[in-house]
Amino acid sequence: MKALMVTKFLPLPDNSGGKQRSLAVARCLAERSELVLCAYDDGTGDVAGLEKLGIEVRSVPWRPNLAGAALGALATRSVSAGRFFSTALRSEIRRVHQGGSLDLLQVEYLQMAPLCAGVTASRRVLDLHNVESALVQTYAELRTAPSSLLFHAEAAALRALERKAVAQFDTLLVVSERERERLPATATAVVCPNGRDPTGPLDPSSTPTVAFVSTMGWAPNSDAARWLCREVWPEVLQRCPDARLLLVGRDPPPDVRAMASSSIEVTGTVLDVMPYLARARVAVAPLRAGGGTRLKILEALDAGRPVVSTRLAVDGLEDLVGRGVVVADEAPEMARALAELLGDPKGASELGYVGHRAVAAAHTWEESLAPLVEVISG
Image (cartoon, rainbow, N blue to C red; front, top):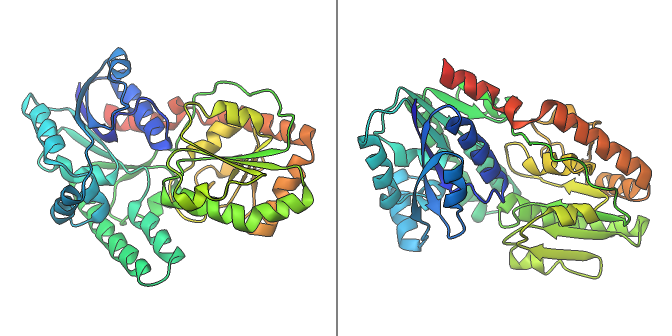
């Protein structure tokens, strides 16, 4: 079988949730096909590592600029899709297509679909990662005019792209039943949840530390960091004065960096999040906007750290509630849950270990991607 996979960025190093999912998909396809991967290289891509996995890499440099984004927005009729549109990557995709018939076209992210217009394959699969229109709609609801109007317009543009994708792809992959319900009723959608290859729990933490691990430059995560610091953390300190909060992840905006204090550490980009999870007694997922399922929840649970999460953040992972995850949607509720776990080292460790076992039992990538394997084998 000959397969072409198109994604945003080379997925090694897999230092973000999106890259982790894309890498898992790429490995799955490489085990079953002759795979060519087309993506942007942001200067950190590990081409040699991907080639060792049996993947042929065709990449172009990631060089975002305002003029290119504007032309892309005109071509795709979407601001976010336009950001990832380039004639260089489109040409590379077409060269692969012209090199011989394809059995499978696997596209990661809705925004990459316009680059694959005209590419034929026996089976065309679009992995949405998030239902982007619903994601952007949540941004709009968190803002006031005039910026909310711009997000409402972009949500409408993305809904149009999703309707087009329903017609152009044989199968759409989503990460949860709720995400499937957000698509047009005519969509052929298959649920492929996010997963995690277990590595084993860390030793219990000796300090009352909370970790929020995420890509801080992503709007829902930076919003969550602000809310956590402003609305939740002061009450945690009242209950547990020695508590510390770690905001771990790349590209924090200036106002998130400004949250740093005697009790809050903002790390910026780190090579490995495990040392920070090792310091933490509890992880937190305080998202108020967004879509998909949170790979960072699986990562924390696998490390043996219980997670206090909003209900939205645990979407698609509901089976883990009570099995490593504590749900708290309001600020006082979340502060109380965090403080109780910080003050109970043994209880936190036991709950984290329950979460680790739950991830290992039911949330491995092999199990999560089994529906995709069925689709491409059918």
